Image (tube, rainbow, N blue to C red; front, side):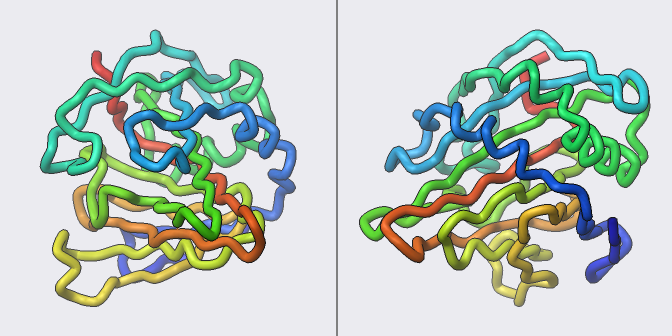
Length: 218
């Protein structure tokens, strides 16, 4: 695994050498996100307590809520997503990525970590908007964007900004390739990923998004 700092000490990019292709099967099971128009985004979510190195305690499943200012597309409503597969958290490769995320943010035992699974599908008739809410923060402490698969797509470049309007050029522009994870301090930068486009009839992008703390109601 390689690591390098991008633009500031609070932004880190990790390139893993492990093979994460075994995780792609879990994305096949994801249902369509009913809160995003277009039926192109698939979303699953679970919350875990960090109890020890490589030990994760699944928490009661609840809704998530963001206000309209944070999320202009799906803010102001209680959103409920299906839980991720119980077997996923036992996958050794996922544990490697989760542990790296926790190490990078100096997570403490007892911290709550959300694991979002997102598949963004694109066709010639439908752009795959990876961030339909635009330039934004997630209203958490830290965010880790971990790419698992880019299947028959172009674009999908992640940008980091110091202002929500995007009036200033992004401090980072990076297409995350499979096996790469970008970790950011959500209080310091805004993030955005542009739409993915197909290179054939249909393509998709699979990512995990790790957040600390949880967006679930407590």
